[in-house]
Amino acid sequence: MPQHKYYEYFGPDYTLHVGPSNMENKNSRHLLEEIRSKLCENLSKLQHAPSVQFQERPLDSDLGEVNLYCLIFYFIGV
Image (tube, rainbow, N blue to C red; front, side, top):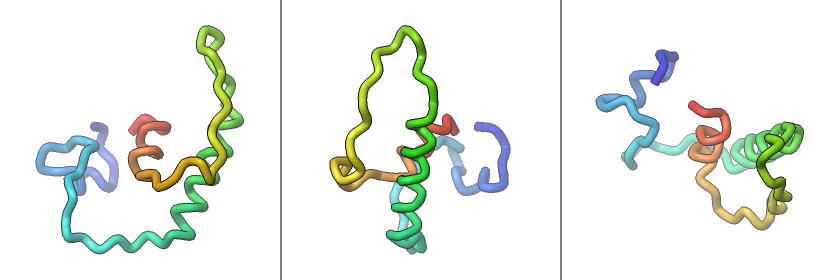
């Protein structure tokens, strides 16, 4: 994992999977919905790879409860 300002948060093994803790979740539902919406909007603007079949993304309402952090990390490649 490259160095960044939140590097110590991922310790002691410095992997992307951070186990559950007793930390209070201070993210509002509204903020998470805005992030998900913007992420899906940005992803829909990307060109697909020529050898990969294109699939329509599900409607936001079809996504259900999504772990937004995992989704964001997956798509931005952190």
